[in-house]
Image (cartoon, rainbow, N blue to C red; front, side):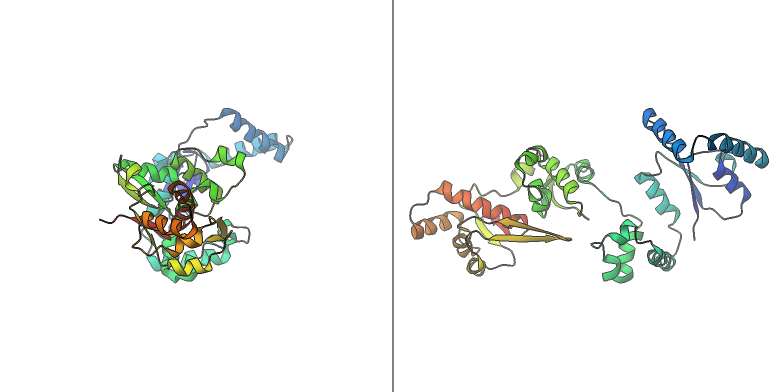
Length: 335
């Protein structure tokens, strides 16, 4: 087992512990962060003082001085024969990366055994144990556990961090998969809230949706060269485009579709119902991977009477938003 010492003091208790050499230590993480919010720092000190009581302060100071006198001079970390890695904060990605590197010498079987021992000992209040939607380590055995918790190159990305990574490669995100999960309107239907939570910028909306959902474990996206995202995704504005269903049959869906019906999406414990337009059934019945939007409009208008392109387009857009949002319908050109 590799032991790593985490400390914010280059000449303190950690130094005394290391100087004794009672335990083999592979490295030290030294938090070099500074207090950026002086008021917050003072409030934290005040809370601690209230917790221990003002009468305990003189006793604590006296004990600290007595301990220091008994221990003698405290060596600085730099004077000890140990690898010191400086990080801006012990809570940041730099610290996690350093810990992964310091533990990289352990053999995979040993790391798996320790991880399983730890999982068995986790208290019921631990977030990992309370999350019923993280089950890779249960469903896929050692491979799932290793990939979930022990992968040396794994790191988490929020939507803004993921977008920055893509942008750094000269690319931009054209669409997220599944699209519905990246829209605040999928989770909130209060009009006033949606005005605040749905900014025009689609990446800002995706960021807000991620915060609202709380169950996005991974980001999957289509990316294109920078400057092409606005035109790279097919839109239903072109009547010659062909709607295509993925893993579904249009006529079968139409038979099971009722006026006022809805499509339910499932994602890690979340079920969302998306209302379908009134003519969802007749439109779905004509989607066969060959008919264009123009063909479907013409046939539908002939069957039900007067139906201009604008009215048809409004219904199809609503249908397409739902089905495309759950990766069930796409648009393709004839060429």
